[in-house]
Image (cartoon, rainbow, N blue to C red; front, side, top):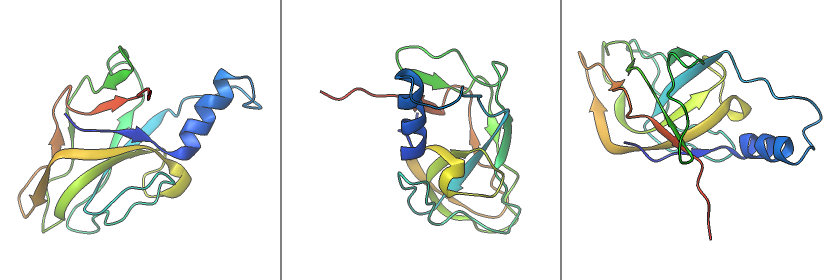
Length: 143
């Protein structure tokens, strides 16, 4: 299980939809891209330390009920495993993940992010993966 949150842009979209100020209906992205980072992912979608080279690529996920479980109690998680390509060299020690609407862009393309439960050094021959049910995205309430 990993901790998660939404970027400021996505929180503003949700608030606009809930309170009628969105300007137009929201259409969920058809494809999502799961990425990793050795550094931080900020609320504005800035990603620090996304690996480059060594066979790293974001995981492409069709955004349907085939890949995501039904949300319950403010949380949605992955129904199937999301597996990255096998590393052909070091990706560094990954500590965070993010979900984007573009295969390479960050900033406004990043919609959610979080910290991994345990940081992991990815080296030659490793295959990073989120097992089914391990990528939890949560909306939380504060008091």
